[in-house]
Image (cartoon, rainbow over all chains, first blue to last red; front, side, top):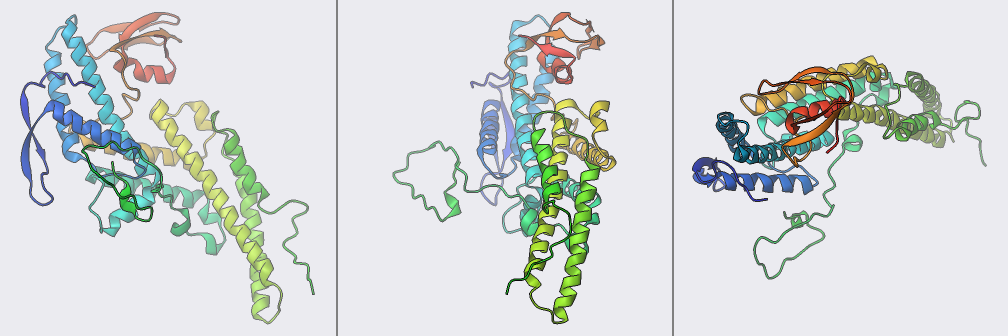
Length: 199
Length: 206
């Protein structure tokens, strides 16, 4: 999709984390931000597990949507160009929401697994703070629900939810589509390592 | 020497059949309406489990007192217990996800027909879910971001819709008021009539 946003010519600042430790301020055009969002969206939709939350990109796009809406509110109804911009705005809105929705669905489906990972602390956090709150609430709500409907009526040794059996986990062995971003002569695909899942 | 193991006197019925029946009931209704919460079925399974558990406790006590040959029966019963528990959890959990899907399709208010097939705890769960979802959507952006909008990728800005019921006046974002009568056709911005299409008030025709 070609990005024809109203402000695409105008440069704007977006903060992107540059290296692993240091923060670098990179100036991105809105078309580039959009590209980043689309990349995150595609990766998220095709990956079996939850990926890192792209907070900066989301915030950036949200800001732009607001700006565009403001700009468009001054334009009259009959303007043809404004119609195209509105459609583009709708598209961006859809991609953004779909991205966040996909993440929510994954969180809900594997909520106990996600929270385990989060509590583990070995890898960096994949949830945004808001998503973490949601995940915790969802897990509590689910367990309370199961408890009140089923588990409390069980014989005494079966009243607990057995996490080792009942936790649904993403299928990390599922196949994913990849597109080569740069030319590499050879790639080793080791069936025993989990690192061969590239996006 | 073989010895008949008295599993449990349940007549001719197989163990675990009731629990399986519950799961099947949901499976059969996969794309239709959610069947009513089967309280009776659940109760029967729980009763079966209680009986199995009591029998097991008796025999465990007998075994520790020195009687032999009961272990296989105990194991079988325990496996049944675990299986029943699993089935019941699956039943409730699957219903939960169905209710969740409903939230995304139709919105935060349950239609009375749907509400009838839920039990009280499920309605409670739904309320909780609604609340945490709303909190989340409010927290992502300063003004909030309604994720239940824009469910379909947009193809065009305006869509032609036919009104399926008398809805009355519908005010759009820019203040224009459209009168939605049954069987009338309108050409409206897609983003604004999307909720009405999902509620079944409007039908997307082109």
